[in-house]
Image 1: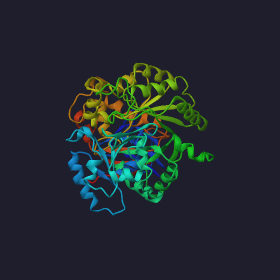
Image 2 (image 1 turned 90 degrees about the horizontal axis):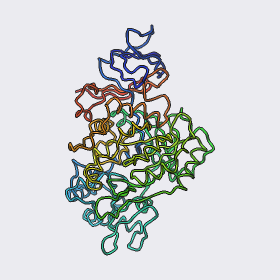
Image 3 (image 1 turned 90 degrees about the vertical axis):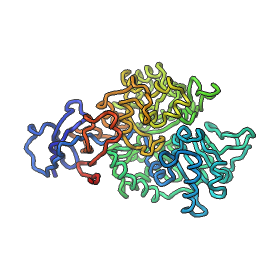
Image 4 (image 1 turned 135 degrees about the vertical axis):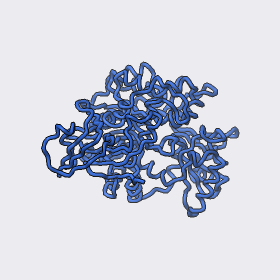
Length: 531
């Protein structure tokens, strides 16, 4: 079955043929794209795109789809709904009315920089909402939890509980836990929380697929793959059967990967809609949560350099495993020291994959000049998120100061060094009520202004066309999801049709762009309701 798409403004992301107005699709694959007057004779269904702008489907190179689907059912502690701790407490009380006596109350997305009190909530705040039912709130960065006294009790956390390796239990002046748990300390509570079944989680993922499609996202990555108690490979395959449409590349946490049965080569088959793409490690925490491993220190007493969460030996061991199985190593690193550690460890050693980056560094907030040079020389890719600085400007200014914030995420400089770059959202790990929206990231990358108009380093702004490519073509090259990210012969016909032409819109309106239609394999899988 041929499908002929005509009268469109195609941005193909194909360097050989960037602009077109017609495309032929056969059995879900693009067979021709170009000028309508040059179209070869062909029979098939014709689709009039009415002169609208067409882009390849977006590929989100770093996010957490399952967590995103789960948090969509939790209390959102973000503006505009919640702007203060007192408002958070009231919202929790309302939430409690619909909960059973044995359930846990979960919320997500708080950012102390956006709260009227200018601080994070603590256990005493949450105890005002409930003292007999456990409450767990996940900070926007996902690296920090705030829990109430009941949750601390269930987890067995007292003043005598030591900080776990790579984590911190915040304490008051008397040494009592405040309820704020950083990095690996959060696992002390997470390990006690009830676990949904594979079927329940798969249903959540499948349901959220439509939200991805409405944002034009046709390719996704899972950057926190687990093996126990539920294996994510099995989970995503089950979600496909329930309606998950996105092509999915899974990256397993290093600890989980070591528990995996690796004798079935099909799990690494990139031609499959779900496959294992790599291993994930953490070298530090977050900028906004002051757990990134930085140098110089965060603003304040000048003594907080964040948390280092790995070592060279662990990085090399994970790299050897990735090399053995022909997959990637992805390492979370935000602070200068963490980025340097990863780059120095794999300097001129990241070479086990042909035609694709063997090592990718996630976020790369504050790269040093040496890190940029050495990463370029080693073929190390960077996967970054323009939405962070855009949405979390208050925390960045508080933690880094104005000058250092402006110099963070220097995308233009990174590209000029010749480093492979892909854009992504890291959703839901950002203080934004629409965290997975690619257009927010595109506007932030082009304008380098925060949501409130603050200049976040406009000298590091990039052209819109480049930004779109970093969310499509370049994202494919980094994630290695095959035959997507551009509209060219031999590629899957995954594309989106926009309500307005993004390349003619005011740059301040990019974030408000709407997708009218999303196609996968040439079939419409989403259509915006026209008013």
